Amino acid sequence: MTFSRRDFVKTSVIGSVAAGIGATSVFPHASAESGQQGHASQKETSKRPVILCANNGLAYVEAAYAALKGGADTLDAAIQVVKGPENDPNDDSVGLGGLPNEEGVVELDSCCMHGPTRRAGAVGGVRNIKNVSMVAKAVMQHTGHVMLVGEGAERFAVDMGFPRENLLTDRSRKIWMLWKQFNSDRDWWGPGIADPHWEPPAPDKKPQGELWRDRIQQLQQQAASLGIEPEYQLAAVRRILFPPTGTIHCSALNDKGEISGITTTSGLAFKLPGRVGDSPIIGAGCYTDQDVGSAGATGSGEENIKVAGAHTIVENMRHGMSPQAAGMDALKRIVRNYNGDMNKLRFMDMTYYVLRKDGAYAAVSLWEGYSAGHPHKFAVHDGTLRSETATPLLQGYSQEWPPFPPIPEELKKDSEYLK
Ligand code: ASP
Image (cartoon, rainbow, N blue to C red; front, top):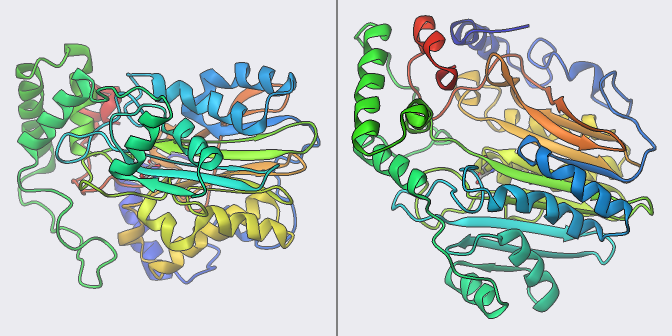
């Protein structure tokens, strides 16, 4: 089923009236599976090893899977996957080339858990070091601490031999400059969606089509004058209109049943300096228990912290829930935090990746995707590498924050990036 943004707004209104927690019309995919039973789309498998990760890791899974089969440690295999996007200057959600904070500085977060030794490591707000996944592991291995942040984390990384480098690529710098130029009256200061007095923005008086055409044309001209390559200009515009999130989580299970997990990110684009999201928080962005399984998250970090998502999921599985039911329950807690108010929930999204110790896995998301034709995907390898679609809790598509009016259909046709 596909939804346009316009359809979605209609659905939201109905949803917000109907929304009681557990209302089956609001949780179409989850209603049949609130308890311990499996689900049609639940992947039960006794195959091991298994690697499960966010879809931006797809290209790196095959090699990591081979390493795992060859006896590599589960955390090392998971890091081998996430290092791919960390090293890729064109992945602007992680590591090198990540979109910066509002001051133009790239700040990275990561955490990991090693199942076999039941240890954890994390770093938050790290500047100038690309492979923060490895720094998180180094904190675990070489200190008596679990988490280091900011300058201390950077100094520790340098002491451990990680090179300092400029993480702001020219392209990400230009996108940040475009964002500054455009966004002088819109930023992350002031009350957020969680504030009881928050109101959705009033609709603009100008016809939507005109408004969008003006904004997009103006931004494209500015992008050109900043030297952004023509073929990347609309992608840059999209990132300005809808500051993206982006992260990678990976859980790895070997044939002995050992399991580990890691999450790494550059966090929310144009965030306030010093902001850390869920990704470096053990229990939110990642949680692994050797007796049970592993879970990780990508999406609205602030929301995930409040439900301790990854830990909640692992605990749910400990008490007998399937991976999918466990993930859906965490998503429902996010919905509960907003009393099912679709006018707020539509501005957030969340995907959980869940791997149980026996190899059963699931990925679940709050919404179907960020627009029709862009469902939330994840990568899995259990002998065969593939990309699958996460099972959504709510029907429809999330809307980016800060909110903008719906994009007219004719403009959507013009660009892949604006769909
Ligand atoms: N969860 C990340 C954060 O809040 C962002 C994301 O996953 O897209 O920093």
